[in-house]
Length: 223
Image (cartoon, rainbow, N blue to C red; front, top):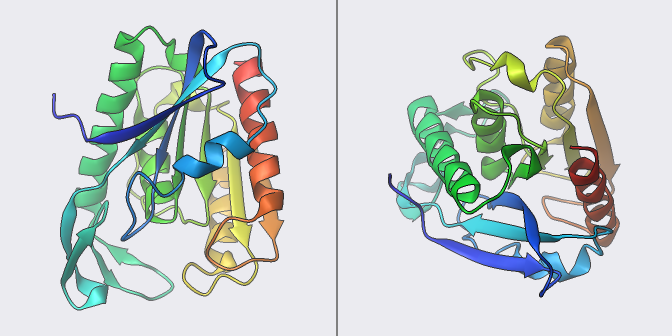
């Protein structure tokens, strides 16, 4: 099993760890990107959560003139349809499966594991979570799009999985129209989705962090 290098944070420190959030960064970032947010989530839980932030491998990215940078997959064209390397995306999803497997081996029940991601990481989170062979606690997709909606083989076990979509109305990198398209695609597939919109660019804002903390707490308590 090939395990990606990760940054890990436990919250609150000293609590018995009974849940995990595997959180993927966006293009050109790394696992340190969202780690500082953990202490701001104000989780209302009587148990601890391990946050796992993996580092994507460095690969050439076509839309950035072939520059090598951390990426979950190549993006070939920056148009509304997002021509991405589906094979690479699915390989990244398998790496997420390995991380979920490792959390289970560490004593976490699969239904206490959330798969999350920002931008590119969010696209991988859809593929990874909806194809995983065991029940999960939820999917948290931030400022992203459902890149594999036409090819994904959804495991029926996830038909009632909680899904949180967040997007900024001022996002010029991944326009909110792609977030709304993801919402429509998921609803057409029968999923119940919580959609949260913010007046922000391709980023995370304080209001969103508060909503994320509340959503994680509810998803883990209900699972």
